[in-house]
Length: 201
Ligand SMILES: [Zn+2]
Image (cartoon, rainbow, N blue to C red; front, top):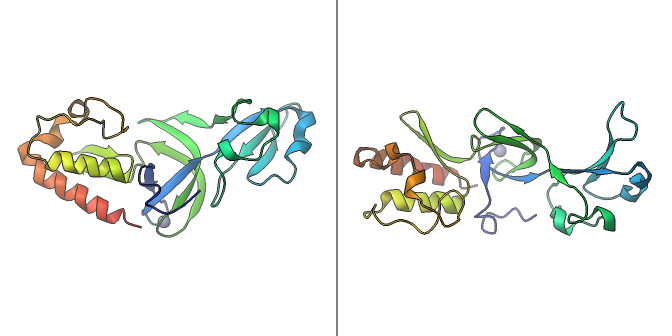
């Protein structure tokens, strides 16, 4: 994984729990394996075999990415356990406001690397509050699109892309109207700009 910001401008950015700076996250994956296959994973970097207590037959392998790890798609795996051949799954759970996924979080500012659950959209770095409501964008590029849109003179022109997903969609309909009033505009723009500055590693 490259950690430079320019190549990961479109990647989701979350807040580091140590310094509150911008951090990237890479999902941890698990795959059940046959007990006889344990030795296939000996000495494989980024992979750990785990036995689930009290269920002797239940063995799984964990892929926990770290600095310099290849993506799971490019990982050196035994043929039958490659990404497309085996049921690799992320570890997710529902939260009050969204979904949390187990991941490795790497801070771009202080360098802290932390394995934890990431709760999205609650933990997105590019996020501002206005009168108790949250406006967020996952990545630097979507946050810039959002700023440009709110700052723009012609609100009637629908952007081609949804600022949150980067996919073609109705953009206006997804921004809470509180953020789009003439009264809100200066404050919202100021806060978004500040957040973009704070998001520089
Ligand atoms: Zn940090």
